[in-house]
Length: 494
Ligand code: SAH
Ligand code: F3S
Image 1: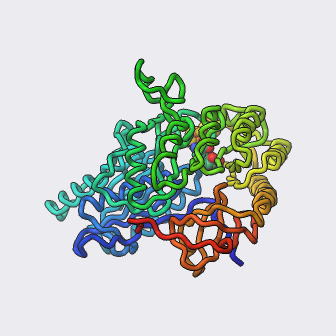
Image 2: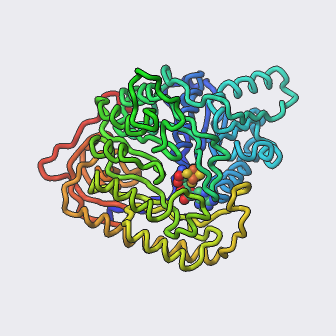
Image 3: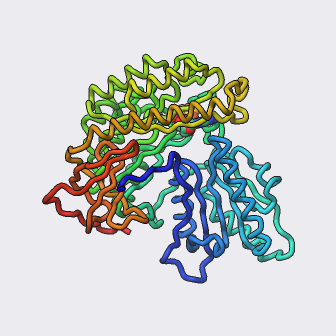
């Protein structure tokens, strides 16, 4: 069977051993939990440690510095980090010189509590200050060398005024074919259930020149797909200054640069094959964005456009800023521009006030829109959010049951969506080999659908034509179209 079952959330990612650093160099091991933005931030942190003369190790036992990049979006994500920190405690008893750092959303949210519950943590660095980690670690190691007996107290840095995205010139690119590129940070919306605005702060869009410089830097080093990241990536530019009279105007509000402008600019970048977007918010879907998607063929024909619930009453309680009617109109606008567009959604089941009929409305809406990819989450109360003030009035049992029901329906809809591609020739971008399936490659169709390609002599980054012979709820599988020659690896690819 070619088709695997992809995980519903990103798996944990750990540092890969670097080859270039001298054997005596101190070594970092970084463990990443949570979303793609964390993955990007971890790459940046690894890059800065490498630049500072460190090596990376895939073996936690061999590390001199261990950093956890954490997630707070659901309670379960935090529990996983606590249990890893617990494991590490034993290790630190044997290796008192080990430096332990915690970065990311949980670091930002809990700060002092981390030192209280895990006394072996040395550094807590928030969501905007993480690029300072190498200096902080160096200071700590120097301090320890001076006063070997006394252990300095833990240091935390969680201010939100830092500029997290520094130039990458002089760093190594380790992203491979698929490069994550954060174009904006933070979120200015305030969905009732969501911890993100409080831990990631207000929106901070990067200037377009900076985004393009980094995109070029990545593509020159082997990236073929750029995945533009933002909590509401299609609100990119809203916070940038209005353009002065006489200056070139963008397609955003008041002539500001927008995501549409980034798409047109990246479309012209030689060597770049695909542009992927994560995550869009329905309220910021504009005609200019729909047009840009239609006109830029490097943009994948897939958009993650989370609806969260199919009930207007629950959407109101969630303060999502749209109702179903508006969501439908946004989808219509997008599908008028790009008729074969595929959509993905996140769903929360068991949010406070979700009655059986509201849940049934979510089932209807999932089917009505025909989402090709769905992530279903059981509501998890987050301290300090508006929803946490409501009574968590859906029992765990009901949440579990609704979760299973929505997943079962999602699988049926997804299978049909994928099956519609059977027999059609697909333009496939090959991303990487499957770890334990020799001769099978992970690729994505132009519609962003996962494709398991059985082929010999294919390389990451190759664009090939393939035909789907099998469909599952999670992807397609098949081989090359007859006569197709396998592509070659891009120059400079790792
Ligand atoms: N910025 C993105 C999502 C951020 S969090 C957006 O605009 O949608 C990723 C997903 O986690 C959300 O889409 C939501 O479905 C889920 N999520 C967020 N908070 C949650 C909570 N308290 N309980 C359960 N799921 C949650
Ligand atoms: Fe969270 Fe809503 Fe922003 S889900 S990240 S507050 S758009």
